[in-house]
Length: 303
Image 1 (spheres, rainbow, N blue to C red):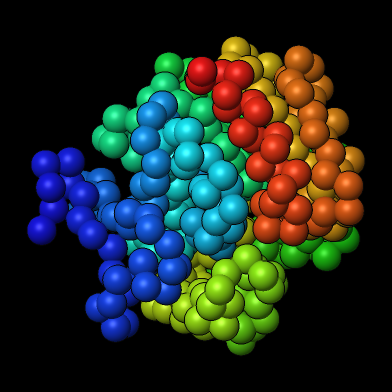
Image 2: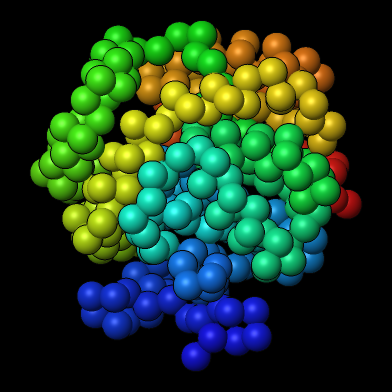
């Protein structure tokens, strides 16, 4: 049953078993009711709040090392964006504005503000949108390989897909959805490196089942097609007053490091931490380096 804030315990819809058993950690898993649409989230630790936002197709598992590192000093909230992870997958456009609104409503309803907001990739874009539009919610802003409003450098395949999707949105949506379903095992494997969990195989199988679950591929495809519309935030990042940190892997091929300039040009006072040798998922590829940067930043802002 939901509590007064609309929270319920989170279970696997396939088996009904607690997700705690799969994660194998003492962490509170919940779902928050936002007017009939639920976002799943992790609640760990106690103290001043830090909100973590995963990127496209991501979930709280992408921030596993950071949750553990931060929860010893802070209350850590990590939610699955609308359409991703264990959150609901309503039939919406999944535009940047919709991702932003769900994130804002989540933070406001859970009353975890002002907080340090940490976002990865598209989650970084959601984070800077929050800091720009609702500065009262964001005490500090940390972005890990954030999707900039305008790309300085874009892989050729991404550019061709974006151009095709603009002309043939329905066909592109079907193509992406089919690709996600057919490669779910490979995607799950790449998102869970060996050594992070005691039960790596179970975690990969669980994430693969999420990727194949009803509505996931449609939501992911629509979100991907809408990515270029983050350009509406171009020029507005310079309005952000919250202290900012930008983290980037030097070997990122998905969101190349050259795009750092598109963020720092509008946030010239932001700290920059480059993670040598890391790709697009430094949270899992180089967790110690990311933890060191984020923990130090959060302590300066919140303590």
